[in-house]
Length: 547
Image (cartoon, rainbow, N blue to C red):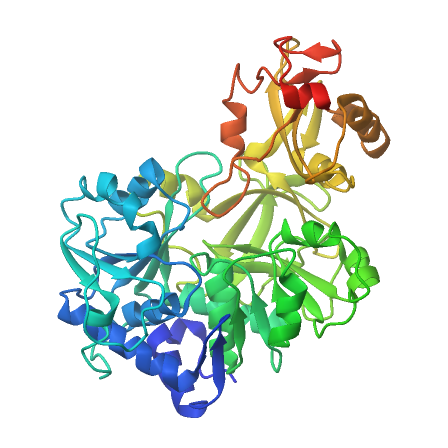
């Protein structure tokens, strides 16, 4: 039940209320452990007391580099309770990307899993303000005492058991809903990741909207998404917190283990991202495809609802979500329109589609989605240490999402592509998303990325970079023929390239800026030019010859 509107709540307060009302109810399940609301409340207080004893104070920024294990939840609540600011760190980070987050966020403390500790010395040596490193080793008991873990440079080093040895008294600090809960680093699809300032109210509003739009009440939620991302922590853990429900957290997404996990956890709803659904659909058919308790996928983009229902007997719910604004667009529960991310969340936002001059466009026209909050603190306060990016995002009193949308006459919004992904070829505006959607339906294609590369005629030519399903084969001519059938003629890629993997951002999105800067402005030695019937460099690799 709803205790108070998000603008009046803080994360620590909500956990305290749930520990009173649902003390012995199951809250968190992991592969080999489970915790009630009361146990999470106690463990979070232990972590909070340990951090206070180690010198962490309200307002300080604490980097958290932990995988999907119980400690990342305890730490998140503990930092909220003492008024410190969490800086979740992608566990794939190393080198410059890791340095960008730790230095750019002005962290004074770091909580890190011991499996990533060897990445730290080159980075922490350049962080003079980092005075505390807490090392959490796999197998450390949550409330154990004694012992100390080895760690690289980074000020004083404390092992997890030592951190948990200071009792479970409730910290006295009282955070406000407007206070910073976290600095969440966004994907950086067009450059270095930016740290979005997230107040308590924004994260909790997003979690509450999951309850309103997806109706998770009475259902166990399965979360195969990383908890260092907003989708895993807010949509999974915090939505279960608000409704007194249970979230089952996988260590990571695995296509081969997904359905066994759903059965073992008895989950009725699964959280997903865009790439998960086609991967599941491309797994070999099984007689157990419909033998499971799952009823619903909740995802950012769901264009396979019919296929999911036919094969697995599961519906999918689509919304438009962002770290900076939670869930500004969604369909009311049961009021879903296939291919649409829903209508504006009018309790919290105004939304419009605008042109490059921020003039509002009529229905049916494509432009950038912009937002205005109706409630306090439900949109990011900006990007930490990056005034220029903040000013660009909030120009003309709108928050600019960077996403191209169109709106129909009934008020439903449809995602077109990222602004940076738009391609213009011979007078035609082309959506990279539309190309990728069509190509990804090919049985041999695992995923693809469409980009614009310079044309001899001006504007762009279309290049498609493709990752094949393991064991599959596909030639350039065969893929081109498929594209001619599936796409309008002006969208058919001129350039094709097969790769083993696509570069990823911190949030596991495709890093297209890396694709655009490879070789000669996106054209590499392994790029096939269909108009010339040859590789750009005329030096095919072994992989290309076989294709």
